[in-house]
Length: 231
Image 1 (cartoon, rainbow, N blue to C red):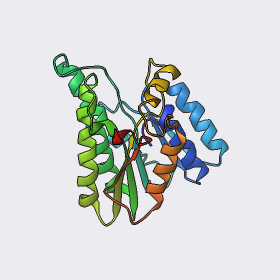
Image 2 (cartoon, helix red, strand yellow):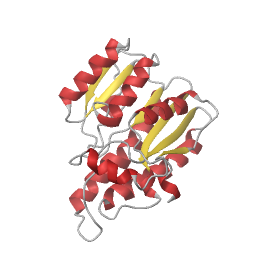
Image 3 (cartoon, one colour):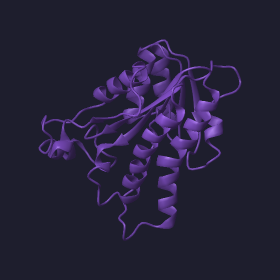
């Protein structure tokens, strides 16, 4: 589980722990949040192996899955880690572009590659993406392009890794306020959503568990957006 220390990632980690899974919990810089999440997951019966790695480094994928025998080989992978920079086509820098694509697209690809080489039998991958790839943000250009690539990777990997490994995605809408925003920001968004409320992390965790459990679904991306895509 990448990016599992806080926000949506934390909710997925705790849902997996509740469902009986042991966990490799990756985090980038949020060590305190990751340790708290690991403690909560352990309190729900999970064994948790914490891994810190900078996913902008292409070598990081090889460090996420331990080879020391602490945990059995991974059978599930959730790619949740992401960066969400503000940039536009007319001002994105090569450095920002490279980092966003590295973390949000290249890392899930390399992690899935490493996972597929290690999973002993059948396995499942869920990629966390964004419904706004269908209606792009103007002010999050590199993020939107990277998540659009992740959508394409999800379907391509489902074909490439079948029948042994299923690959699906969840495309998130208004779930939590983005960094720097508060609940008032989401109240404004809710006025544009057919269900007239924001989602919270529960529906995301439930959808991820569904996709990990259902062995006849692959190549699907489920929108968790309260119907925002309808408008």
